[in-house]
Image (tube, rainbow, N blue to C red; front, top):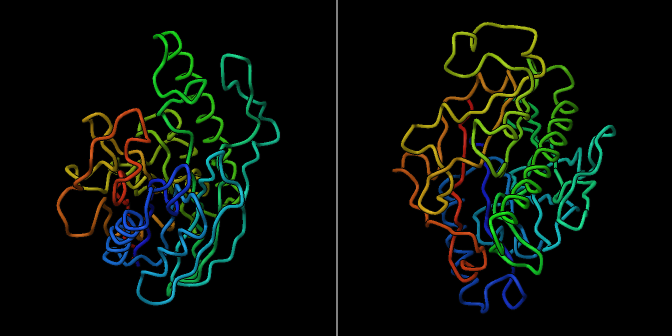
Length: 316
């Protein structure tokens, strides 16, 4: 089976403040997304940047066969949220944006504003596969693309850029800790026997501190001697499948000309040892052909497809 994650990039119906301006542009975008999903043929696909539930329904309607949808009830201020497209009916087991009990609010702007919850909810579902139950959480952490007061995408000066970069990092770190708390619940101390995955747009790369928070106990990374040596951490650890992706494909987005892997799939001990392949883009294809994006997300409002490549794993 194939399990994947994909940021669909501003999936809105036309005519609103964030979606494409006309129906033809919208239908072109849907067709491009549907073609990729059809070729991927996932059992379960975590999706991000669903701006309107109806738009995801439109996309599902362009796919062959029966598809089921699950969406978080915790969108951000623009209405975007995470969700799943699934071949079988998913059972929602968690939908939350609440920080862990001991976590305090984090500063979010120069005026002293604070955030006490994740900007977008985390959704976890369980599906039945040919090999048993699979539990998966999908997330979309705070972006590194910065927004300044007045909905500006460019700072007045470098001091403002630095401060708002720090505020974004505070939020992403808090959200990563919140997602890790959800992962602990899903693993239930039994990662050696449970198939659990945490996936989504984490908005930072493999070695970033926020991404590392998600892994749990250190050690046993893929490619190290400890990977095949059982230890106590296996019960609660998650493994990022990034090292299994061919090096020339190890990116899911291009930011100002620089390739970066910011979309991730993390798997429990039982699941990661059943992974037979991992990649970005389409299985068997060349490295993803992606546009290079800049600091203004509105610049791609009329663009087809997505500025992200899907990330996937094949599991035996």
